[in-house]
Amino acid sequence: MTKYVFVTGGVVSSIGKGVAAASLGLMLESRGLKIAMMKMDPYLNVDPGTMNPYEHGEVFVTDDGAETDLDLGHYERFTNAHLSQKSNVTTGSIYNTVIQKERRGEYLGKTVQVIPHITDEIKSSIRMLTTGTESDTDVVIVEIGGTVGDIEGLHFLEAIRQFKYDVGPDDCCYVHVTLVPYIEASGELKTKPTQHSVAALRNIGIQPNVLICRTGVHKLGEDQRRKIAMFCDVKESAIINGEDISPLYAIPLNFKEQGLDDTVLKTLALDAPEGDLSEWREIVDKLAHPRYHVRVAAVGKYTGHDDAYKSINEAFVHAGIANDCKVDVQWVDSEQFENGTLPEEALKEFDGVLIGPGFGSRGVEGKVKAVQYVRESNTPYIGICLGMQVAVIELARHRLGLEKASSTEFDPETPDPVISLLSEQRGIVHMGGTMRLGAYKCELREGTKAYEAYGSKVIQERHRHRYEFNNAYRERLEKEAGLVVSGTHQLGEHELVEIAELKDHPWFCASQFHPEFKSTPLKPQPLFRDFVKASLERKKLRGA
Ligand code: GLN
Image (cartoon, rainbow, N blue to C red; front, side, top):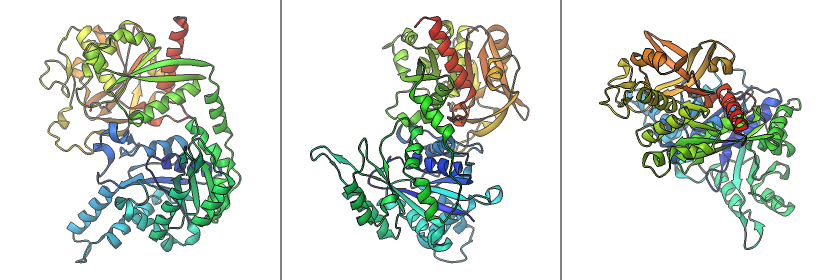
C-alpha cells in the first residue's frame, strides 16, 4: 500500500524544501523502498515554461517533455524517482483542468467551487502519480511550494489535510521545513517564527509530524528543542537540525545522523531494512578533497539569480567528481564583449568555456565573438542549445565568409539562416509548451568526440528549443568549415543535427540538446565530464 509524505515550508520562501524532500527520497530509496515525487506550485502559470528563469530559476525538463520547477532537478539528482508530466502541478494547471471539465459539463449542473472541486482535482493529481507502472510505489513525497500562511497555497494545504482523512492516519506524514533565525544582538536562535508557522498549519488542520529547522550556521540547543517540541506538539526526536551544509550532497548524511528516515518510517508504520549511503558518502568525500582545480567561463546574459542555470552548475559539480577536480564556474556577461567593455582575450584566464541556453537576441553577438576566440585559441568548448547555434553562426560567418549568417530568431531577414525553424513550425503563435521538448534519440557517429564520451551509438538527451540547424548549410559547413556532425535524430523527413564538433580543435562539442538535465552525482554526464577533462589537460599544457 502506498504511503504519503507531505513537505511544507514555513516563515520564508527558498528555505530548502526541495533539497529536504529529495534527501528524504534518497534515504528511503537506500532502504529499498520505491518512491515517487511531485511538486505543487501555487502560482497561476500552467507551467513554469513561460516564466523568466532570471527571476524564477531554471525551467527543468523531464524525459516526457514537461517544463517543470527546478526542484524536480533536485529530485532527479538525488533519487531514481521517475518524473513526468504528472510530477509538477500548479494552481494554474489545476484550475485549467477544472474549468475545462466545467465547460464540458462534467459537473452535471453543480456549482463548481474551490472545495470540493479544486481540492478533489489536487488529490486526484497525487493519486494519478501511482497509476500504471508506478502502482508498486511505496512512498509518494509531495512538496508544496510557497510558504504556509500564503493565501495562494491554501487549496493545496486543504487538499493534503483531507488526504489524511481519506487514506487514514498511518498513511501520511507531514514534514514542515521552517526557519529558526539567529538574532545577532541577543546571540541566540529564536523559535517564535517556527511556533507561529506551526500554529498557522494547525489552524488549517495539519499537525506536523517532523520539523526540519533551518538554523543557518548554528545548532539548536537543548532548550530550543524542548521549547519547539512543547509549543508545536512534535516529539523532540522528530525535530531535525537543518543547518547550512556544503556541499549540498552532504545534507542527506546530516539528516541520516539525526534519524529523519526512521522518524518518517515510524510515522508511516512502515518497516524497511537499514539503508546504505556509502556511495553517497564517497561522493561527498571526493567533493571535499579534490586533487585538481579548473576555471571555466560560462558566457551568458547577466543573471543575479544563481538558480537560473542550476542544472548546469550541478553538472559541473558532478563532472568535477569524475575528474577529482574542483570546477570553478564564473559567469561572464556576453554583452561586455558586444559593447567592447571587455575584450574576448579576457577568456584566456580560463581553462574552458561554456555557452549555455538562452532566448532572444540580447548578448548573442558577444557570444559569437566568444566562440571565435575559443575556436582560434584552442580553448575547450561546450555549447548547449543556443551555445550550439552561436557556434554554427560563428563558423558560417568566419569560415564560410557568410558575414550576415544568423538565426531567424535574432535576424528574421538574414540572407543566410544557418539556424531556422522547420517548415512545420512556422505559424505557431502560442508560447507555452510549443517547443521541441523532452528526450529524443540521437545516433552518434563513431570516431567522434561525442561517441568517445558516451561510449555508445544511441543516446537519449532532452531538448527545449524552437530553432534548428538548417541542413541547407550542412554540406558546406562540413566540407569547408571543419564542422563534424557527430549526432543526428531522424524526425520524419528531417535529419536533425543534434550535436556537432570541430575537426581541428582539442575539444569543441556543441549540442542542440541539454545534457545538463540528466547529470547526477552518481552518473556524471559524459560531455561535461570530458569537457572538464579537456580543460584540465589544457591547464596542464599551459603549465598553469
Ligand atoms: N532560443 C533558441 C531556440 O529556441 C535556443 C533555446 C535554448 O538555448 N534552450 O532554439
